Image 1 (cartoon, rainbow, N blue to C red):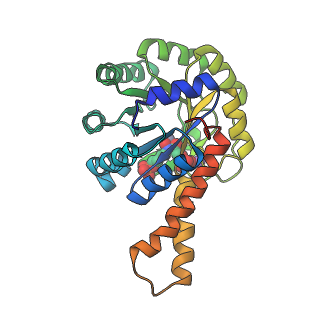
Image 2 (cartoon, rainbow, N blue to C red):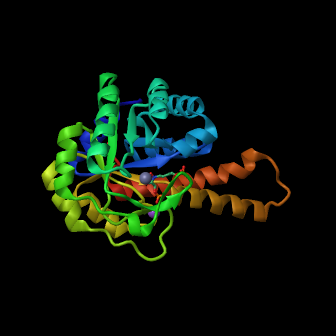
Length: 283
Ligand SMILES: O=C(COP(=O)(O)O)N(O)CCCCOP(=O)(O)O
Ligand code: NA
Ligand SMILES: [Zn+2]
């Protein structure tokens, strides 16, 4: 069933585990996520970036996810990832998204608070949960790019003020992860996660989580991360499977035959993540 994002994150915060938030752009990704959630009995957040909505259309994404959630035995939230455009955020809410991110992290603290507070008032008025970002998460994906030098870690005192003045349901923090693949091994600032969790005592979000070693993910969850964003690892699973299939079956042109192994590979990668995050069996 489809639920508000805060319901899923509150449970994860209370019981000390993390829920996977997986990006979708097409039907096969939606099916892979839902099948993995059913298989592992995990609550799950299905999210679309503004790039994903541009590609598929907000109505298509919403219709596919609501259809999948309707028939699922686990709680599902539909979330806008890295919302920066007021109109886009409102369109998502209008199409039944149960959670939205307002990413105003490029602005100074006061401006980030002002923009975030406006979205919180609108979204909460209709029962939609809000995620915001403080500090700048590095890395590059289509619509999101932050140079390494501009990535700034989240200040715990600023975080306390930010949450008090905005009323957000969850906070994405910058603690050493980056969007997209890593060149070297990412070093997470675990002490910073611990201090922020102690100060805020609320659901915390980790972006840029593809490519982070399993042990680091588990430590971040132990310290209080409750939502873990994954996109690149699913793209790589898709790419691996399609490449292998086309190499072995160069003359097969049926999309169903080409995409089915890719859906399976994505499902297996997602199910493994759910077990590592600790959400397996929590639904
Ligand atoms: O934090 C993450 C995922 O990070 P990861 O890809 O490192 O797992 N996300 O928020 C996903 C970002 C997707 C945006 O990319 P497009 O603009 O290309 O749609
Ligand atoms: Na990453
Ligand atoms: Zn992100």
